[in-house]
Image (cartoon, rainbow, N blue to C red; front, side, top):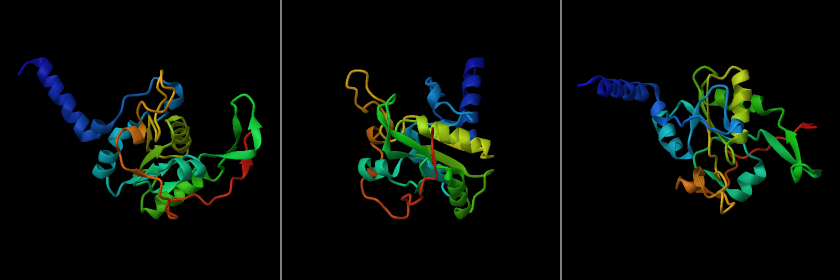
Length: 199
């Protein structure tokens, strides 16, 4: 066995033992990057959840309206939005309704982790949003609060927009052929009230 073959074998062994076999590359888009540098593609998530059964907490951080009208991944533990939309305000710069931060986000994640019998040290959080920006922001926030393992799904539920189609048809949970549904389950839905408007 020559040196390069040995190095490849060692690299493969390390990847398998550390779980890196399920790790996506660091995204080039800075909005999708996190401080923990733990990434999964939507395609990788089902196998990751299966391999780490009992240790994972799968959270959808989109708004309740997105969950209700666009659908969600089968297997999520909870919808805990990082932010809400304010339908009485309009952001002229972003051409959309205003944003309201969920000030209870960390508390709600903490409660869910505890409910599953896990801690900040041993829980493997998997966060998903529409296309990877909000899940990355959520990961950064949770890392500051002491969470050690927080994976962001880099292509999200709907995926990135195609350059020519301008539709979310490039990647993402739906386009990966993963199981998803429009059927809502009260156990996973968010019933919190937002408490602070982002200026």
